[in-house]
Image (cartoon, rainbow, N blue to C red; front, side, top):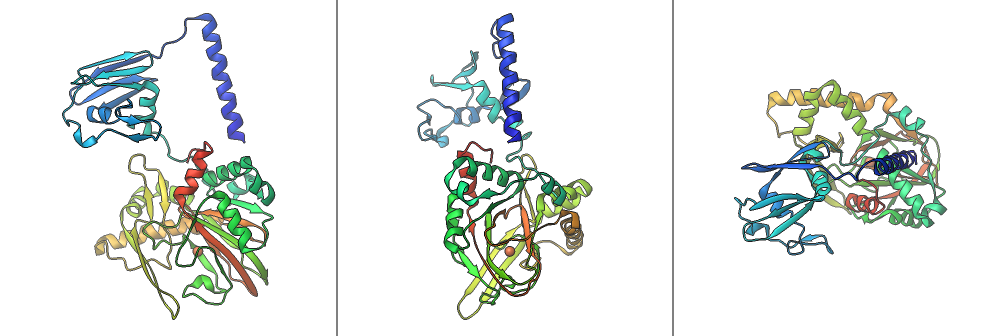
Length: 402
Ligand SMILES: [Fe+2]
């Protein structure tokens, strides 16, 4: 809400400024200059210098012949563009760059569209705004949980929930009826459920029904789930339906906060963990379940164009044989892994939450690690995974940057 208010006041200021300039001066034309070089078109607009490749410009033509603006799909066959194409003529007309190509086809690009979609703008901006946290930062932010009733009926509440989720990587809903069905309903209010070998909705007690430590009463160290998937599950949902006993608090750690600390203190270690692909395995061989799932990827994953982190894979239980690097690099990798582990284990980075019946937590499994302390008594937990693409899509449809 603070962001909205801030944004609105900035907008209002901008409107006021524009109003003032209109009364005292002529309406301002967007000022743009360009130069056509042999290899690219150089454009100066809005204080940014940008460079556009000619094939790129032809490929991104938004004319009706090249692009279907109803379906937002390209009509043009990129395979038919001459790779040495150059404009016949170029000009700036009002707020557009207008190019005439050999053969007469004309492309018009709005200057703001070019600026927004330029590499120069892209590599300076983040894909997803986030607030990285340790325990104090998260607690001081005073994020309120959603309530079942309003969450299920009010779109603004869902939007607020998604905004919290995007910024912090965790979000809570209270007063959810303590059934698998209600947990499923609350999940589907957000997006699609991802079915895995554990089922669509899973529900278990500590009965060792599956060949995995999760199905015991033991403590579980911080980890991300399904790191053995080539694409780990995007979102984890937990709902403790019943617990008669002690212990069993849930541990949450912002993996990106820890990794950014590592990037600051030891950039080479960060780099190594972002480059070395590591194998994770899930091997299960019981009477009822047979699985061998393998995923290979670095522990830290960053977008190559802006170095923004988008995925941490950290599960020491499921990490498999390390044979993707030679013995001398292995030593440096273990040192880097230790530094990351140290950051992840700092007590001030640990957020401990007691998931009482009725409290559902959504966890960004690409960012926030979870664990639990050991417990006594019978504890019934249910939950599921969500597909990341669909959750982010739901957020974007609310106008959120995701
Ligand atoms: Fe887990």
